[in-house]
Length: 326
Length: 249
Image (cartoon, rainbow over the protein chains, first blue to last red):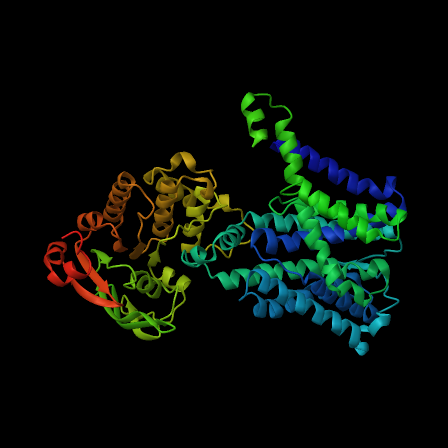
């Protein structure tokens, strides 16, 4: 896909997203909020996975830290911005602390540690009744108004709240795009490619990993803290390790090596789940099969596969045909 | 003052003392070859000097500073770079990015998270000039992992030099190359060394190559220095001939 096509596609997508509450049903808007939240989480996760080469299985923990913190703030002080910013900051701090303990390990050891820390947060959500409400969770969280520069914007409807989430998601994606193309992003890819070589060009490998982990945690926390105002409740299952699999699956589906991969994957995963749930109670089995087929069928992810198709279509030289055989 | 001084370095792996009381010194501007039979401890010595491993005993001074306990990345910033025996480039980064990341790390620019890499114009110019010197100008956009073996070897040399080291440690820079490529690579090392005033400490296996390149040789055996001196003296040294050059003498 060349620059011009990409730009037009992006403009079209933004137009659709902006007009969605006007043309789509309330349920479509609600579903899109979930796509954006998972997209944000997955985009952050992929800085850690695709860019830095670390597979975290504990992102749901930071998502939950964001969600619970935001819910507690909103219950005490019904104003959206402090809730969301507080939730994001709490998740970033949690990621900084747990990351400090995790990033000295890599590969399976890192994955297992993050899984364990994630489940630790799950246990806290379950048992620390005074703060988290235990298995009841926190209920009656208000969709507090957005107060900014003396302006008070009430958010009574899902459609209005959707725009808040859309702005947060666009900001998050734009910032991540810059990070990935910055010297920091290049350094993270160097760490991914060869830890030893990276250290010997003067990069502090452990600090770089910790930065990536903290940023990924902050993104999970941002996504998580946007959840309670939508649902008005927070319950422990959002912290469970099965929830940690969602950004992993979304990223694998969309492709770890393309920037848009996690976003496309989040879209496919949320929509596929929503469709499958209508037909069977065994939806997780069917969804699992769909994910396996997609991951195996589109090596490198959907985005890479689609770009490959777009590149191949207009080409008719024999050289291109030869490549297909390989 | 010597550029690098190592005193009484020791490193054990279980029962094996890979480096066992090594004393070595490198002066500014010279090219020193570190040779020795297999298992003499050459690579371990390099790993201790570069900070890849920490010694059990002994001290390393670089430009007068005790760097014995410094991590590798901190040594690079003080002017001590290295290459590896087993090929180590960044395989999924392009050839240009391989050099860029080393240049940006040297400039301590890796902490910049919001400005695009392309904003560092000078770093790009430097990377492209070095690619041309390495004979890799045509491969700037190629992922390093897809380059031919010889090209990867030269790129690795380029990565080490992108740190603008005072001292560059090369661990068998020509391993895996055919004789023709070997000669080319060592000629490249010589040319790059002259232009930059870099001091080299080279571990090599190919004796012909080393005799042509180094002004001074250090021969290791069983983890310590067996002999050192100018190449001709080493060639004449009876002990060295027995332990190492045996079959060639």
